[in-house]
Amino acid sequence: MNILWDFDGTLFNTYPAYVEIIKEFIHEVVSEEELLSHLKISFSHTAQHYKLTENQVKEILDRERMLHPAQTPPFPFVEEVLKFAHINVIMTHKPRGEVLDILRHYEWENYFLDIVAGDDGYPRKPDPASYIFLHNKHRIDLAIGDREIDILPAKSMGIKTCLFQNTTPGADLYVSDYKEFFKTKGIDM
Image 1 (cartoon, one colour):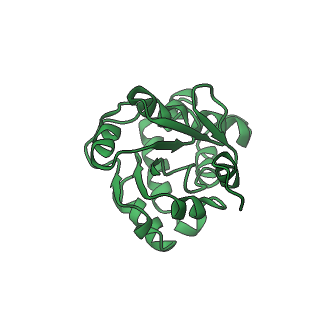
Image 2 (cartoon, rainbow, N blue to C red):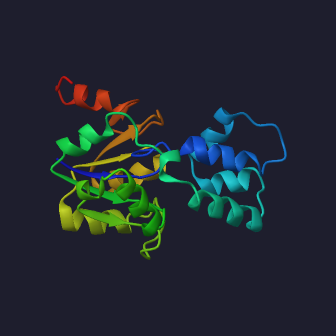
Image 3 (cartoon, rainbow, N blue to C red):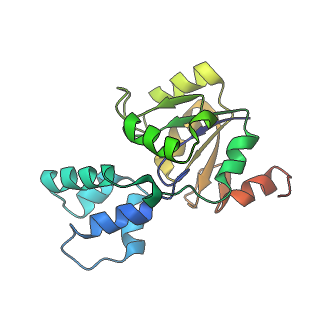
């Protein structure tokens, strides 16, 4: 199986750290759950919803870049799925350097045959251009993401999709933890 992965919120549990940073810039009382529900749509949506200024967005992104990889750990059992797959690739809006720093920290760089990062010049999701590139090169069987924008490009191409910790309609498969992934494949862990 060849899997295309989203990065933030799919491979790595980055949202708790991101929520803490963003909360400092919101001038109203907002729960972590509410903020997370907006982030699960997109960061752009979140910035627009909370009327964050351009300077605030820049400062938030700068602070996110300063996070140590230990503050954004991998989800439990995701490494087992990476080992199970024949080919793993990443498509993320995160800059390549940040992705590589985190992968190196966890010694995971060898799990991924290819990466399309936010600074590679492709349009942002849900535009399918990066997915088309990765699919033409690696024949993707499944796209896994935590947001609807992560699965829309794959759906438009006829690739099977999996939403992680998200029940938005439209995915072929839903898992709340990666142990469930193996249950859907009939494999006991």
